[in-house]
Image (cartoon, rainbow, N blue to C red; front, top):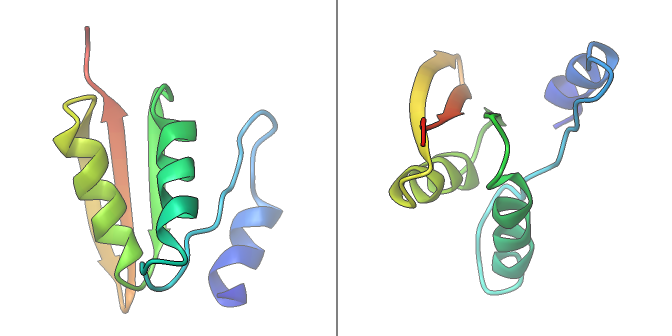
Length: 89
């Protein structure tokens, strides 16, 4: 994933955080994925960038909680970019 991570890290704005998702979600990676979702649950905006089954799974799970709505979904070859925004309360 360095072809995705390196340019994102180089252009990360101060005060923003980049967290990595596993390529696959299974019994070993599920606790980590749940911890990431809990960590971003109160964020105003979440960008999910990558490939693999974790990208749509995390997006769908965050939206199903009712806290987030999709703002943008684009594909760039095999790489998905999903922008979720916190719903107004």
